[in-house]
Amino acid sequence: MLAIFKNILTYALLHLEIFFGKQGIVILEYHRISESISPEDVHSIYPEEFDFQIEYLVANGYKIVSLPEVIHLLSNGYNKSEKIIALTFDDGHKDNIHYAYPILKKFNVKATMFVLSDYVGKKGWLDEKGNLNIDKVKHGQWWDLLSWDELAEIRDHFWIEAHGKSHRQMSTLSKHELREELLDPMLVIKETLNIQSTVFCYPFGNYNNEVVEQTKLLGYAGACSTHKGVNEAYTTDLWKLKRNEVGRGITKMQFKLLLNNSIVFYDKVSRFFNRRKTYLNKPTV
Ligand SMILES: [Zn+2]
Image (cartoon, rainbow, N blue to C red; front, side, top):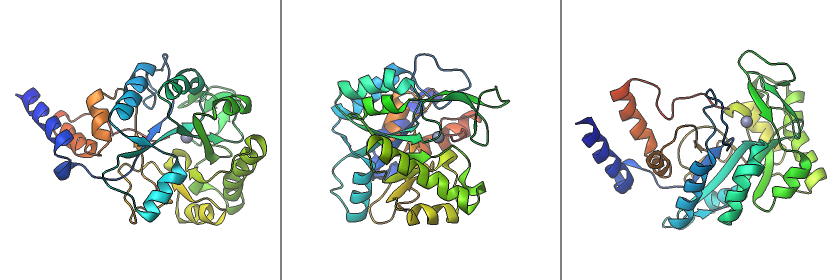
């Protein structure tokens, strides 16, 4: 009985967008794509899942654009019949060159990658505060990050943007530290790759009014948060752009629901029936 109900619900969510979904620009949030993902890593997916997702977007007429383009469309309006989407990758993980890059190349599409100027080319354990450590930390994740040479190699299918100097929680920093976190990646990316950063991404999705204010003052045109949802012309706050994470265990159907944001409604219903962790219910990085 539950299975029949679930099928009807899924059909309604996918096809009756007018009631459940929301039109607007969707920004997808990825981290690692790899064949070997540790069980506690809920933010990464397998290469065959990513391959399916990009093929689906291309086959279904989605226009995959850069974040400056998203900001331009949100500020000036766009034809709502167009299906516009942006792909973002956080942190600059090494496996993105081995798995994500060939798939982006295969379908001739481009994604945005947010990098950390102090951590490029390094390996270590990321602690809860966002520092990279040589020694294992209690609740940490192992990070192996792309080098500047590798970033230069993949730039034909990745727009490189700034995620910070380190990965620290920005709302906890002094004004001086905060400015350093925002400015350093902008300067180093320009110096090393000759790319002008335009859109920032708050580490852990962590920000406050001061963080937003400084991000604006230092010349970024917008910033990505980890709030879920779709971005709508004229009303979405460009310094709190919403993103839908594509993470561990996502099914093909859930991926489709992410694209019109009806995943939020689906998740509520699943939580009501299952009373357990659902797709959207996990920490942010
Ligand atoms: Zn991050």
